[in-house]
Amino acid sequence: MDVHCHLDLYKNTKYVVDECIRRKLYVLSVTTTPSAWEKTHQLANGNKRIKTALGLHPQLADQRKAELIIFDKLFDHTRYIGEIGLDGSKGNKSFWESQMKVFNHILNRCNSSEERKILSIHSKNAAKEVIDTLALYPKAGKVILHWFSGGIIELERAIKSDFWFSINPLMFKSKNGLKIISSIPKEKVLLESDGPFTQINGNSLYPWDTMNCIPKMASIWNYSLREVENQIFKNFQEILN
Ligand code: MN
Image 1 (spheres, protein in one colour):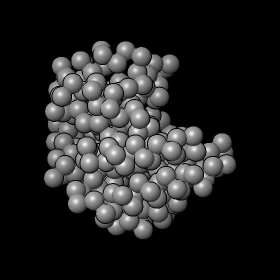
Image 2 (cartoon, rainbow, N blue to C red; image 1 turned 180 degrees about the vertical axis):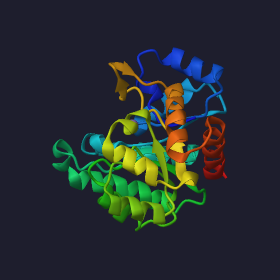
Image 3 (cartoon, rainbow, N blue to C red; image 1 turned 120 degrees about the vertical axis):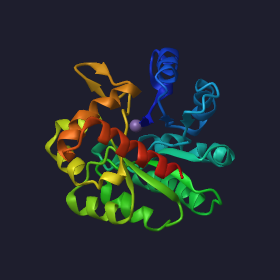
Image 4 (tube, helix red, strand yellow; image 1 turned 90 degrees about the vertical axis):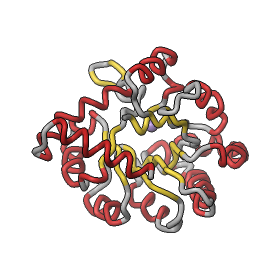
């Protein structure tokens, strides 16, 4: 599975989609702007394992906030929302107000929806603010924190809030990433590539590269490869329930 990738942003989009279908991968294809949803949805070509999430990336919040109108129009077309969230990194703090406006608008919409949405959330340098904001919308849906990199206090709050975490191969390369991965309850771990932005040795990660996480999880959990696969697939079924 890959519960957070940007299918529309690969150069070789058709190859990636065909390969995902051939490998029978479950893919959550996230978008960074509402106007990208329609075309990204078409990329999946009706394949039932590839779902397209409707999103507005926090780094684009200022530039694209007018697209909230498109977001609202498309809202009922999908159960999946993302990539959304907040980004407290240096260059993005300058339009914090727009980020908050967009994130709150989307969560408010999800919170009053009949359907229980599944949300893929960005929280880079803003874990506390993301968790604080999510707490205001308890019925927004099932939350997946994508590439979580917050501190231990935020991690504990997120675990208490019953959030899921999608982890990617790059997280195993940092000390904080490893600490987070070993602290997440086994039932809450999902896999992501965040491709094509994530790279190892200059090569973009593909959705099937999430499988690189399996042997690493096996040694952290002291599980066999098969046990890790079963556990993570069970988690995936659980979030879809
Ligand atoms: Mn992403």
